[in-house]
Length: 469
Image (cartoon, rainbow, N blue to C red):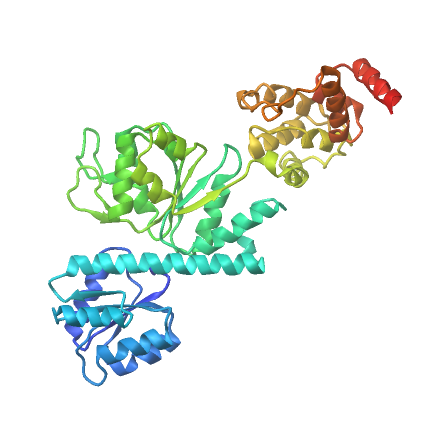
């Protein structure tokens, strides 16, 4: 399988010593996250490479024949200001380091004695460059209102402008190696966005999905990291964890808000160190998958309650996508309804039925606490029992009566919270009737359902309103 290059831009190593170039390449590749490397032994070729290749970072030696690093540095800074330069020199001199930093170098390291610090400095520079490039791409996409890869979102049915903004943001961050956090209520389609992120990343490996809700610490570790033979009673064979199965691809962890604190620590170490130990093994393995995480819970609230680690919370929200609930994008309801109706008709091998005129109005006035998943369930249930030419509304009305009992709808703030002087009772009643008729598009049957009153009671109210006009 072809390796996924990381970062998305090249890191150019410039030194006249082939042995140092080899050892530096091995050191960076050993991190598991830096393998998009170019080597250059002849300093005269550096400017040509920068002009023809997508180089984001240069590791530059100072003392070289033909063209020294001290002469190359100002040339690179002037002609390629977007390229970051780190000096890697055998000279341990404060004056030289200060002079290089004044000329525009990002950092200065001494060869052989600062290897660990050098790798950390390279990773820091890469993170900064990735964020800069992503911010630039986001600005360009939002200003031009374009999608480069609309096919990646073909499974997501929408015409909502806010959703289009989410698509543009996801495109901009999809090539990054940093985690993506997807939040939204249950049923909004978080897994579809994880699939889109994987497709946009162009990674060669698979998308591996794991729902971590309900996994205790040991099962979580075994599921993700795998185990060695004999790691515990019953471990007769080596088991590859999901991380290894997702190598060069994407690992999607759903319902991350349900993780125990102990499991959160394991996930944090994986993201920080980029390596893990299978259970029963003392040999580390590298993380070679991109991590995408989803939850319907409010992680900020869980952190405030001491149920979610602060360091993990901030590491996960580097790239954050929030999917709005269906009730906030009502223009998508007719599209989704038609989509699921055609899907269900094909699955049940039935003709697409005629839709009652009342049904779209009824759906538009329902809050859908279960979001898209609830709408799909309604349509499939209705099609499963459908026999006549006209689609029955019975299934939808029954489901909505159950949904209206949902606790979340009963916990909304009072509409009078910001009102200093309460209106009189008859004034409120008249306003409610008028609003219900407006939302029901003049359909008295639907308005009765919205108001929770009988047809005669509504007729009486409407006659009274007509008499006042």
